[in-house]
Image 1 (tube, rainbow over the protein chains, first blue to last red):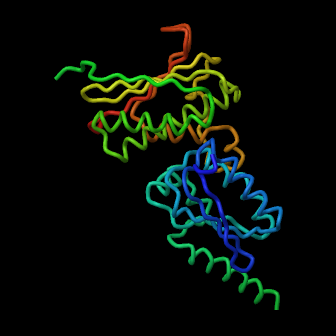
Image 2 (cartoon, rainbow over the protein chains, first blue to last red):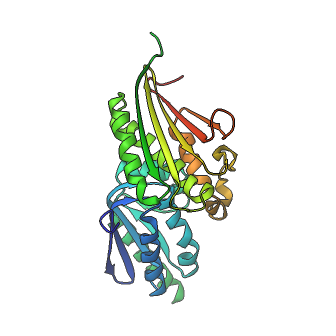
Length: 126
Length: 148
């Protein structure tokens, strides 16, 4: 199963950048669920998932993002999605995800959007 | 033109999520042999994955030793995929459509899968066990030429 979905992450300040490689279906979704749960337990509420290496997604995979979104948003964070191959984006689009999630072409845009949010907050607090 | 049967292939899988990849590969290779392009072939494999995932979750309640049987029939103008199971009858078309306004709450009810299936195939027929055979039969049909 490990070979069907590889998950790793990089850190950029307080943002966790999660890379997915392989296939995300009902078989591999629990791996991602545990992975995200661990990040959130470690207080990473700002998460960007990079889909560049993902070949396949079913609704079981999309469901994982639904399970954590309220928790990270409650912690002033978000789950942003980036670098989707067009066939993966089509499935997200079919289910109306662009209304609920920020989906960017490149992960830099998602990073920028988190950092701008921090800046806005700092200005507000001054 | 007639609608004579051209090719029929069968695949049996256990009711386990680890079988989903084999199920998809079986559907993709048969769909491509039947003349679908790669994108349509992958879309119909996704529809079959969603149907089998729902079966394992709801009908078999995640029991792992039950059997799912797939039959792919390639006709002149359509590809039909029959999914047979001997679990309790469960018509996926009875699942409520996901309401976007209440999305987060409704995700847990399994309505996303059926929404995907409805978007990706042209026709869905459900025949519960006891009518034509002892198995439930979910039939997914994709036309080779677009229907208007």
